[in-house]
Every structure is written in structure tokens, then in C-alpha cells.
Image 1 (spheres, rainbow, N blue to C red):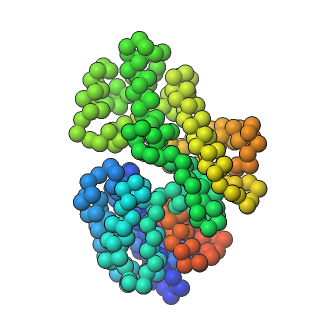
Image 2: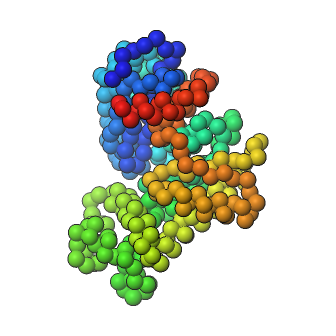
Length: 332
């Protein structure tokens, strides 16, 4: 843990997702003064009281780790999944304001913005998120945004980990019934749940856990199986690519862009094989002659939240910030 030094500004950044939540106190040089990584904090996937309790615990933990710097926080940016859908921004802001100085600037927004900044380091562009959920968002230089997709796991979130997991289960059950081609996904998922036959999967899928927390992790298996030549798994991934591109193209077409090449950041756990997705999506964009430049994040999303917090105060970060922050964050 670093001791407090004389710095111009300290920010509190929060990255709240469907799987985990990260929070950090940082200065403009990328020094980290306190760090917390804990459970998920998506209000659409948990009770509101548990959600509130999670935020309280995070802030208390940070405050305990470095009370001196915590008391000097100038700006807070919380990028959180699910807050827009439930209009929970005011809930989060009210909790944060119970802890930070009254003069601190507090902004709560969708986690898409911090995912974008984790790739563009604060510049305008489009971000395609595919984690537990999925959403496409474009932000211009004034942070005006346009949203495509991400309307919830029941009927949308196409290309999300949950959506891919659903496609995996569909393929398995269709293969079992003889309605679809055989696939190696069956044996892989049976081993994952430690069951002997396909019907036994039902007990796990429709159990007490929220369906997203059970089904989304299955998405990681589709890539391993596809790499071994399974046609069903490969088709699931190709379909997801097409879904991403349709959403990205729609987002691009609804906004006015000043720059020639619009950066598109691919963020989230689904994009583990970045090279495959970037090449495929770039191919789609070239065919349509749309000036999109696909990229992987430079920072973890929490780093994008730090950048967003500084942008709220019009602080320009130096060229070494990303490297310094990444190094200090991993060491903390």
C-alpha cells in the first residue's frame, strides 16, 4: 500500500459487473492507494438490499485501507452494469455521497463507457461489450451516446456469455433429441456439471441460482470445442460475430463522427480470442466500406473508470498513465 504523497488529485473509480466488482483510489500518475475486488454488483441480477450492501461494503473497505487519501477524493466515477435498466444511478450516488467529501464530483453511468475508455484511453468511439450480458454503445467527443441492444437476458443481450450459453444448451438438447447435429459440446457440458446424461442438466439449469449465473459460464466451452473442429460450436461463434457487427453498424449509423477511423473496443470475457473476433469484424466492416477500427482494451475496465473520473474534472493524463496504472494495480 502506497503512502499518501502530495498529488493534485485523487479519484475513486468503481467497475461493477455481473461477475465481480472492482474499486480503486488512484492519482493522475497512476499510483494506487487502495483497491478492492469483490462479488458482482449488477442490480438486475440480485436483490436491491444485497446490491446496496455490496456498495456499502466496498466503500467501507476502501476507507479503512487508506482513510487519509479517501478523505481527499475529488472525483468518483462508477461504471456499473444494470443501473440504467433499473434507474439505480441515484441509489448508487446516494450511497457514495455518504462516504466521500461533499465537494467530490460523483457520476454513476453504464459500465460501457469505462469499457470504451479502457481501450481508447478517453477518446470517442464505440464499445461492444460481451460479458455476462451484452450491449453496444457509441460515445462522441461530448459523451453523447447511442445505445444498441442490451435490453435484458430474457429476449436480447445477443452475443453475451448468457446468450452463447443458451445456444450451447439448445445445441445439446437438440442433438440429444435428434433435432440437430451431434456436437462435442454435450460431453464437455456433462463433465462441467458432473452428470451422466442430458436430462440431468435440467436440475442445474432450473435450480435456485439465477439462470445467468449458471448458463453464462458455459460460453467459455464453446471456444475450446470450436478450436477442435466442432461444426456446431463454430456456427455458434460465427452467429455471435454477425450479431455484434449488426449492432455495431447500427450504432455507427445513428451517430455523427468527426474522425476518419472510428475505434471499436471489444470488451468482456467472451472476447478471450481477440484476434479471431477482430479479424472477422474488420472483414465485415471492409465489405461495407465503413471506417471502423477494431481494438482490444489497453487497460482493465477499472482503468477506464479512473480515466472517466479524471475526465469529469478535465484532467489530462500523461502518456505513461496506462502503463503505470496497470503495473501498480496488479501489484496492489
